[in-house]
Amino acid sequence: MKLRSAMPFHWIAAVVLAATILAAAQAAYQPKFPGDPARSESEAAALAYMRTTLRAQHAYKKKYGHYATSLAELVHSGSFTHRMTNTQRGDYTVSFRAKKEKDTFQLALTPEHVDAEHRSFYAEEDGIIHGDEQNAASETSPVVK
Image (cartoon, rainbow, N blue to C red; front, side):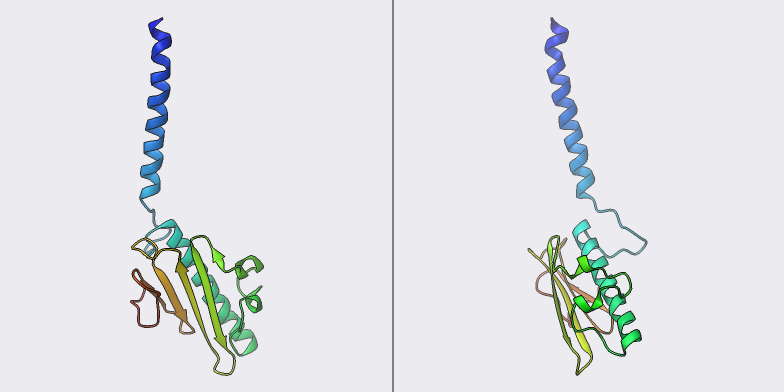
């Protein structure tokens, strides 16, 4: 009889322990590569999107002599896919502006809530990514290293 009453306690303890371990594992961000500047999984995805878009823009310019003026034009440039034209990227929203006559572009990713683990990001044709943990990032924001 005592053995049967102890069974539910062991199951509850096991579930609580598993939940605690899972929460601890999710809390600590594991860098994806040496020097990874991301502070969270969400930032890692946003920065990967930015790097892919910047590489696609440079490949596009090499092929056509100017930068793409829309995300749709970048499809099949480098590894930029049609799915990447969607401006909702997890916790982030993509903003893309380009001017063909000036051969410039601006790429920004802004999270739903800006904080230390969800910085906003900004880049232009120079390929330098800027980040800000308090406001929308701009060319004057600190460089993300």
